[in-house]
Length: 184
Image 1 (cartoon, rainbow, N blue to C red):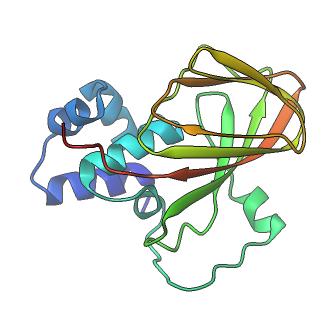
Image 2: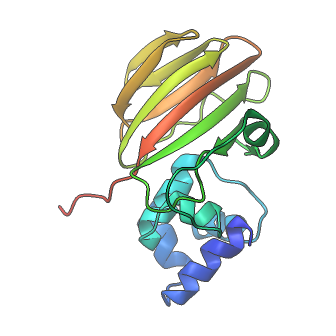
């Protein structure tokens, strides 16, 4: 089952409409409709908001074959199953089959000519990024960092964050925790 159909299935099983989920996520009904109909591949931060609104995890949205225990991933597998977004980057979700995990690890590839550094991301939880190849500027809140291979950042991902590749391509690992919004 593809991503859009999975989101729609979970939403309808909960007897919720597009507007309910869109409002809970803080974006338009039109965007959610495009995602459900496969017309756009959303950024991870949007997927995390949808998963939170549906009371599930990103890994449930991305894969139907759930497993527990150790998940082994080859380099070939991670590179062949990259998902290209319309936001200037591609990603691979590690251990997507394991739904009951506490962290969400991803491999990201961002290309300079495709990246729109105006895209600011924000989602619940915490985030850790580690640069594998290339260089980029990564802004968290009002502070901008220049990151090179071996550099890392750990931050509260509710803070607005943006990235801008310096080199033609940047590869990095990101690990997110997905927490429920606090009851205020």
